[in-house]
Length: 526
Image (tube, rainbow, N blue to C red; front, top):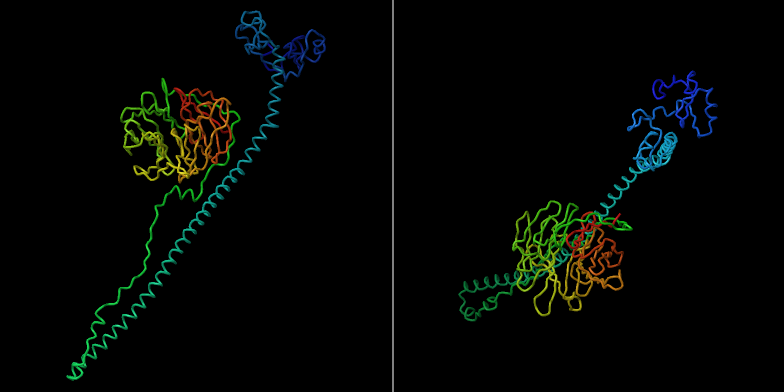
């Protein structure tokens, strides 16, 4: 009877073929009755594994190559179950093989250990993690409620200050009104007194006229001259209110900012994607969310990478720079006609055309304004930053507090930080210059040495959700990361940059660097 078939409880002993087998040798694949166990174990040529027949390996599979033979071995190289005939074949020649029964027992032991680890360690840890989720959720909700409460408190404080200003101004108006009313009442008293005097004079003159007294009438002297000249008009002091334009960005700066909690850097940043964007070269890269990025390509088009959409510039000439607005529109600068245009739904609209200056680099601010770096064509090679609200110039930044240019002749890329600082690359001086929203200098960063023989050469700049400043260094092919106060935090210098030209960060704090004919996506936060 085939030991792999039939009811296991009725299997006969393989040796005596008489008694029902209650034991089984996994090594010899032999069913044994109690009387034959000792006889079987007497064979010392093998290390037997005799177990209860209920624990036996009752169904070793049939060999796929030799259907009449049952598998007794396991090939390590092929990770297949094989029979004794397979060992002699060319396929398994020089392969390491294991006794299937022992291999099976080892796998059973591994399985039991895995189950034990799952039950005693892994599963309890997941349960503990799951039980911690409601507390973490409650903690998050509590934190958010506290954050909202702080916002409302700050709002009340701001309202209180505004109310105080209004009350003070109203008090000034009330005081001025009181002064004016007192002067008016005094003037009114003088006029009333004069009117009473005039009435008495009229009455006296009428009596004189009615008397027909020649003597008194002949002595009459006119008093009209005294009253012909009216008293001067009362000069009342007045006030006027000169409302200022409420700039949302300055109000926001005054109110405060919401920013993510601190995040941990990856010990080793890595390239998450390496996308070819152009056959020869792509320069400026700009992104907003994590769905894709825009680049300026060698055929003078502006392309969105993920869907292959292409928008050609109006003049057909290469844009100097591009930027995305908060609504996803594309702003680009054109040196050929000194224009700044915006592309909305594939329709190009002219915003500004300059006469004496060339617009070079552009960025869109949180308030919807545009910041544009410009250069002059004069011998002095002057630079400046201009803020536009639509087509209207609202700010012009050219000089520092000493009356000197805040950058040298090589003004480069710029970006607005979360705290509304303006971060701009000074390529000629090899510095990053940071100005506040009023255009006053906050600090300059001159770089740190990645390679001692290479000077800091910033070529691109961006900021992330924590307000950290990321400066792209062309010389060392690295990225310098600073906090918003200019303190150096770390380098990213392990991403094999070759000829980097531009940098941006998406909404998930992934870095995009345009490098030769491709854009590299770099992850640097955990």
